[in-house]
Image (cartoon, rainbow, N blue to C red; front, side, top):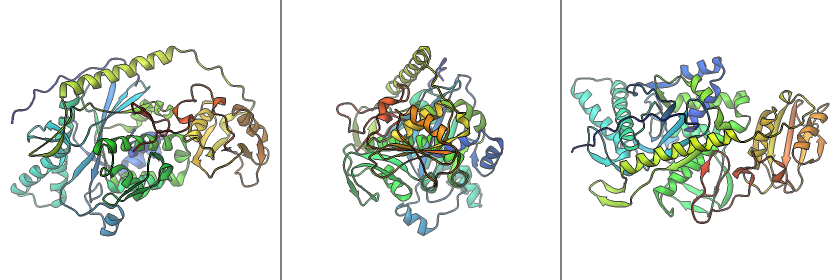
Amino acid sequence: MATRDPKPRRTVKQRLQLVLVVASVLVMVLTGTAWGLYRDITAGITTTNVIAGGDDDDSDNILLVGVDSRTDAQGNPLPPSLQRLLSSGPDSGVLNSDTIILLHVPKDGGAAVAFSIPRDSYVNIPGYQRDKINAAYPATKALAAQQLVAQGVKDPKQVDAESSQKGRSTLIQTVEDLTGLHVDHYAEINLLGFYNLTEAIGGVDVCLKAPVNDPLSGAHFKAGPQTISGAAALAFVRQRHGLPEGDMSRIRRQQVFLAAVADKILSSGTLTNPGKLRSLISAAQQALVIDSGWDLLSFAQQASDIAAGNLEFLTIPTTGTESNSRGDVVLVNPAQVTTFVDQRIEEQQRAAEEEQKAPPLPPARIDVIASRYVVDVQNGSNLTGMAAAVARRMRELDFVSGTVDNTGPTPTSVVRYTGSDRQAAQAVADQLGGIPVQSEGGVTPGHLVVLLGADFNPATLPAAADDAQARPVAAPSGAAAPITAAGVPCVD
């Protein structure tokens, strides 16, 4: 079947625009700022040579792929007990690329945008046929494996590695043809990595509009805000049956989840906790594959603005559905997709430029050396995402980020301290509307624990931090609320 002529690669000028990541990419990117950690992380990561040529524009486009694989990144089969734990179902022998996200990040920092591509998008797959986009990787991998065996290659791991490289390259080319953007880097995470990642960071905050009970995915959740990890987190992002819009609802769940992971890693004490950091590195090494030419240390500096929540998730436009020889497919118009992608990136650029023109907030008066203190935040209010909002404000004041988490319902806000740290505790309390301070023997010296209660007033935070995460979670009416790395919107 004939395929479209390749689109010219577009140069995107001066975009102030992340992984994210997929979450493991964030882990590596943001812990890579120290050379020792960078070396330890990259030493055990599986790489693949799948990026053809280079691109000289001022942005990086990263293809993030989640695969439903029964093996680890090195091709070793997962134990049956672990497969049952992951609710991965029977092994059909077919690798499914269930999550496909193209992440656009400007090289000079700023806001980023992630484009989700429905896995059933009906596209031309180079060198194969017209099919669902999630067939690009497994179908061409299977063809390449057959050719290698026919050529006399007998080592199963060699066959798997070389055929996987072909499948990944084809998926990259398919995404490039669909979006008009050149893919600069590739990151792939499997079921094992996803499970371990969420366990390592202590779970992720999500919110559901209604309770769900889906035996096919193992998704059993109550309505409202909740923290999930491990097998439950995997079920949350994999469920598609019983949702109002099927795979489209699942995509929105994936977007919300990845945004929450990014926020959790960046706004909590994850990166300053040696135990959690080791677990994250181990998860990345077991289950992540990246392209061999990716300089993660440089990317860490490039993507620093994600810590401010400057990441938006979008889904490419579709034109309906149909049933054909390839099953139930989602129709897409490549020209429409390309226009949508270009326009959204340009809008991000203009918005970032306007934000730069805005006068900066007046500096807050702090009578202590903030960088000497770690601020831990616990949210016991009824406002989802409030802890992250307060943590961001503390970082703006040069305090060190500690743990950021939810706690049980609490009526009264307080800043707890120990020993001689009262002055620092008072400085924090003053920035939060003058809430009380309290000496507490269980607090670690040098740490300040902010406990947010039902009485906390989010209006005490400056406008720059008083965004979606500092407002009560509510199901949006009309158009869906944008998904960013700041806040926890309720979804189906």
